[in-house]
Length: 353
Picture (tube, rainbow, N blue to C red):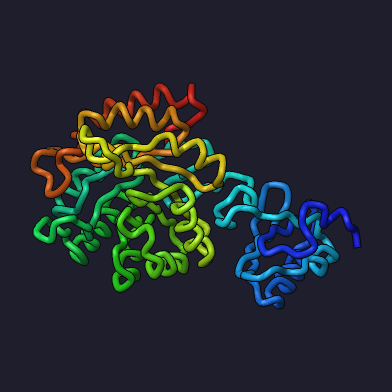
């Protein structure tokens, strides 16, 4: 056995990454995966541009790595020090790129997702979708189910709202981003959505995270309003561990002592998040500020911070929006903002998508 394969790890480890040789055959990769599963662990092949690595999870106690290190095609075994294994750059050094039928998130793109806070009617949703298409925006955000602080506030249109979103997608070709709040609605939401949102209040709803981990559509995971970076990535780990590798992170503001905005938009989290994790990072300045006058400035700041895109609330008449009108911008403001983003993005290493 080549002892160099073990140079980065102890004799026994409980978190590791198996790095395969660049020319390792598919059969050798399959044999390593089989060996990991024989140990009662989970293997997660991670194909890179030059080689494949295999993440190992499920090991609560230490594992003797010598059996794996001696197998054909194995280059080395690397200790993973982060508690979030699959979300960590230690296990997945390359940036994750998430693809939908309409567009790409990550990979140097700056992706815009925009739309009303909630589905209000088919006519209005169609109007907004057609406007976004005219602006070359390919993803519409709109909630069929709305988590509200007050039980007396508008809660969304539910299944009727999902049917409206499906009709609008069929008519315009735009992609749908909408929130899932309950495992009972998972199949219906998955059918209507191209990207499924998990909101801030459900970031640590582990039953819900496990359910979307079984899906094969991208998941947009919003940061909990009091969540640390590690807690956020551990929530993402639930989804990744379930087998769904298409996870987007969204900073939407955290709760602090300030009284000048709805939340505190924490753009300082973007660079350390990207240094720590390979997952794309979006920013929601609408919820992050709660005031439409601040949204354009913070959207531009999000681009400058290195984020991979924006989640924006827009409406033809924000003052008449069924929910969150105070933080919603109108069409003219969106058009102006999009133009400015397009002008600035090349200088900041991004391509407006």
